[in-house]
Structure formats: C-alpha cells, structure tokens
Image 1 (spheres, rainbow, N blue to C red):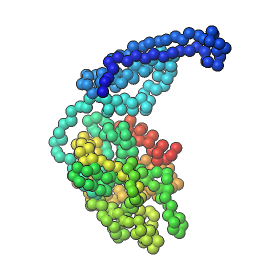
Image 2: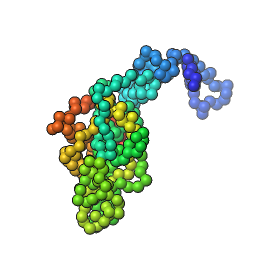
Image 3: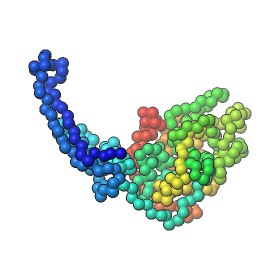
Length: 327
C-alpha cells in the first residue's frame, strides 16, 4: 500500500448560483484556494506522536472549516460524542499498540456454564477496544457461555441483561407475552429457550444453574400449566469470542468471571424479570450487571470495584436508546 507524504486540498468558491446567471459572460471567476496539508505518516509506523488529531488530520479539518467560514461547525463538534469516538477509533486502528505485560496469574478457566461480566480496565480506564468501538452492547454486560467448540474455536456467549421493546406473544389462554432480549450479534438458526427451574428438566448449561429446554417441551409445559412464560428466557442470537481474545480481556481486567455458587440463582431471577414488565421503560440492565460484579465477596473472590468510564456509559446509553428502546 502506498501512503502519500503530502496531501493537497483544492476547492472552488462560486459567488452566485447557476440559476442566477443569465449568461456565461456574467459568470464570476471562481477563486481557487490551494491548501498544503501536513505530512501524514503511515499508520503504525512507530511515530512518537500519539495525538489522534495530528495523526488523522482532525486539526487540519478544523482549520479548513474555519477558512471557508464554517467555524461554527468546528465549535459545535468540539468535545461531542462523535468527536471523542473518532479519536478512540484512531487510537485503536491507526496508532501503534502498546506492549502488553504477561499476567502474574493465569486467567480463570472459562467453559460452558461460565458466567462473565464485562468491566473497565483499571490501567486504561476503558473497556475492551471491541466493546467501545464495535460492540457497545457488551459494556456492563452479564454473559453466559452456552457452547464451546475445539480448543482453538470461538465460544458462543449470550448477553442476559439487554431486554428490548420487542415482544413475543404466546398462542395460549390469556396470550402471555415477554420482551425479546438482545443476546448478541450472531443470529442462531433456531430458538434456544433457557430456564432456571431444575424441576422442569432440560440440558444443564454447565454448573450455572440454567437449563436448555426444547421448544416442543416449552410449549407442553406451558399448555399443562407446569410453567408460565415468565419461566423462560428466549435466546435468538449470541456473541462469539475467541479464546485468545477472551484470555486477553480477562488478563487486562476488561472481563471478569463470576464465581459459581448459589448466588447465581438470584441473578437469574433478576435477568428473567427484565423481560416481564411490558409497561415500564426498557431497562438498561446496569443494575443487574452491578449485582453480578459484586458476586464472590463472601468467598474473598471479589476484585477491586469496576472503574467508571463516562464515554463507554454514554455510548451504551445511545445504543440502548436506539436499538433496545427504538426511540
């Protein structure tokens, strides 16, 4: 790939619209401005400059806008969410990656049934780059590992605290309904029904206390009134995370494993309840995430409290408003 050392910008300023020109003889000669921009080094060339504005030319855009009389646009965009996210995008995709340190202890073992919470790194004050830039729904997420393949394959994980305004209606007396949760960005080929009542049977998801029940049995249980719509959690999609990527997130403090135990049953009751109240505003799921992040304190497995990240919180709020609440 060839990177230009210098960039030139030429633009034309016409002083009258075409419709206002009676003839070519009255055409105002355009003023031609040629602006020579600064040298732009190739991405990741080891430059000592770490200011995204200098590397991508954000400052150059601001200067150009001011020269053409659009300084108001510059002032209005300064410090906005879009501006700050652009800088983070530059940091992730264009700046050299800092060297990572080997963790002092190996990351926790993750397998089917493992429960995870996404967190903010104490070192960077940010969530994982994937979470901040691409999958904002994973910020402050409660996750359950549903499936794993070969040792080098990706884990299939579902998000349990992202309810949406969409509803699923059951063709049963009273027409019960529940909210459809957003469980990930990889659509499944068939529905997966979860529950946390051991008496209903099904395939256990590891030692999480959650079970998978075939759809035919879900219908049967509801028809015989052995169970109700509130007992089930519908999974239509998952998130796929590579083992190496997850290990890196665990080591960096961007993800934490919730220790197994009886406290998980309380989390499941809360998670299931997020899909039940159709009259209230769609929850952001952050309260459930906070409760999950505190699990393990009684066994001295509690880690340091998660650091707040205002930028990630704001981006998550935007995601929820647009995708979950549909506003």
